[in-house]
Image (cartoon, rainbow, N blue to C red; front, top):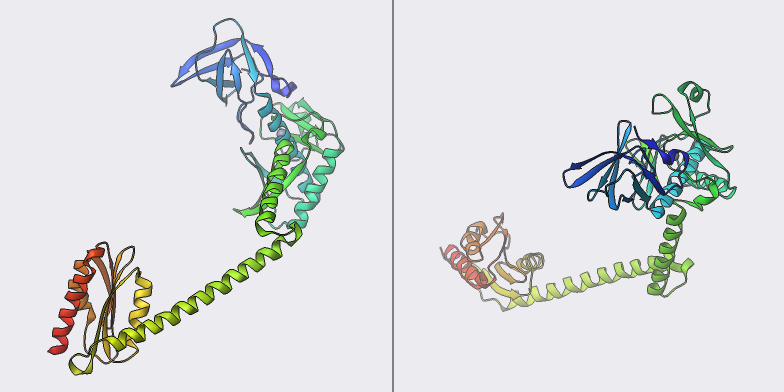
Amino acid sequence: MTQRLFFENAYLTEFEARPLRVQREGERTAVVLDATAFYPTSGGQPHDLGELGGARVLNVEERGAEIVHLLDRAPDSGPVLRGRVDPDRRRDHREQHSGQHLLSAAFVQLARAETSSFHLGAEECTIDLSRPALGPDDLDAAEDLANRIVRECRPVRPTIHSAAEAKALPLRKPPAVEGDVRVVTVEGFDVSACGGTHVARTGEVGQIRVLGAEKTKGLLRVSFVCGGRALLAARRKGRLLEALRGAAGTSEPELPAAFGRLRAEGERLRKAHQETSEALLAYEARELFAAAPGAAGGTKLVVKTLDGREMKELSWLADRIAREGRCVVLLGGRGERASLAFVRSEGIDLDLRKALEPAAREIEGKGGGRPNFVQAGGSRREGVEAALAAARAWVAAALGG
Ligand SMILES: [Zn+2]
């Protein structure tokens, strides 16, 4: 059994303890001490980091009644080992975890929303609430109440109770452990069973900032940051707004309107560009139809290779030409890839799928379509001319026959 020094003093970061067991575990060395200030991952709070016996502490795990420290190498030998818990990480965890108690208690008191789980992440913390229907006003009210308790700088005290004693306490939720229960009390505000590391007075939390909420599996997941993280989050947002303000060339309150105008302008330009492109293609279609020679039975044959054109534009153009008059259109595009689009006017008895077969081979492509409209894309751009020649030969033979 390991004595948990962090239960009595969450500020203790330097300590000495006797090693009870030291053994290799794969790449790491596992050490069990008679007492430790290193907090193991549990209750939603991640483990501490630091140094033990001159080695780096990579992980701290709870295994039954023991706490196992996993080190990057064997610790110094000797009857006692010196431990040093990373004080910044511990301070951050005290702030986040204590802020969570205040926020969870505020949600219970204001909205009867119980916290079912807590996660202290590397960037953000989250709690899952039992009432997913809470709105922005409820979130604001809980944030306000929790921050009022922070500013009142109330004492936070851990105490140990027997199971029978704990039953008589107004715990926020029933304890998850059997036997003795560690209880953390925020004076006059919250009493909860918890084994984590907390601040001694609520004022140390500094600020609790709710970042957002989303529904998940019938619960409401509220994300938040406290203390130093709240300061960093506010600073990052401020810098982001400043950059946006500079880019938009406007004042901060005007930003939403400025972005609305930019979007509307972008949409207007996109439409105008599309209209111009279609007008140009229509013009090109008329030119190509007019310039094409006639073939058997008064059917024109329009065959053309177009550089820099992709499939979508090519198909649109071929379709447009076929509406100009009675014709068969065979277009090849050399854009990023090779593409083919064949169209015939209504009333011409030709199955263009048969013209596509030999043509697609020339561009090492695949395609398909209906008897009056086919398209194919391929990787061999230099095969486009030969593809059109093959298709033209097939069409000429079919029309001539
Ligand atoms: Zn706690």
